[in-house]
Image 1 (cartoon, rainbow, N blue to C red):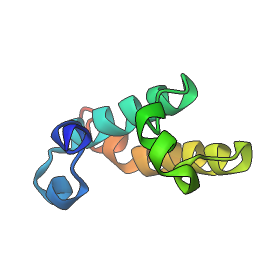
Image 2: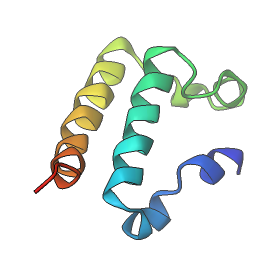
Image 3: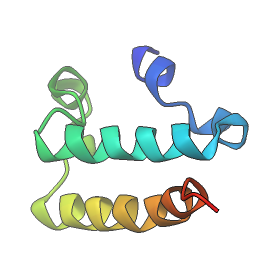
Length: 76
């Protein structure tokens, strides 16, 4: 529940480009720092632990997903 307060993909369409970019940036930071997924969650959900390969794929996806939102913020 707390995670959804910070990033709720069911509300993604309502976010501005700037907010989408920022949320993806935060996701990247949290994953790189080993804060996501939460250790408290993986204790009870062992299959939620990410392998190094999964982490890299997630980071690559998030970086690529940020591109259109960064472009949308460029001055015209």
